[in-house]
Amino acid sequence: MAISNAKLQAAILIVSETASKDPSTDKGIPALQDVFAQKGGDKWTCSQTKIVPDSVLGIQNAISEWTDGEEAMNLVLTSGGTGFTQKDNTPEAVQPLIQKHASGLV
Image 1 (cartoon, rainbow, N blue to C red):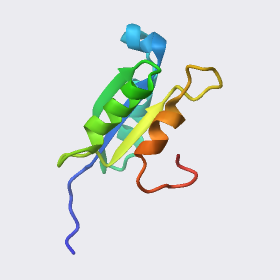
Image 2: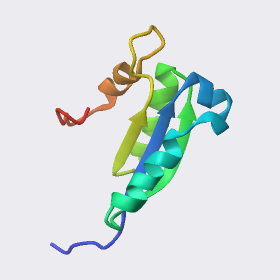
Image 3: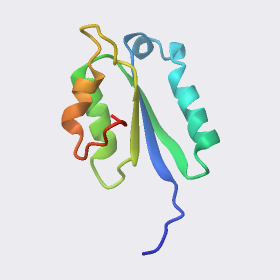
């Protein structure tokens, strides 16, 4: 089996009511892009980013856009929406989309 030199594709999804209304308030995307750039060993590229409000359908739609189809992302990294308020529902939105569970990563 040949080893590909193609970079792995990552997408960053920020779940935030505030940042979805005013993207300039988001600090997550630049910080996570820096991690990929500095620690990715030249193997990763972060080619897609998006900010959505705390909405189950919004989260699921964003992830599905990136994972369904021929040009699917290798990794979708989510940040936000994981607190204990009624609106924080990222884990619940992501759970039904997972086909292969990786305990400790999800």
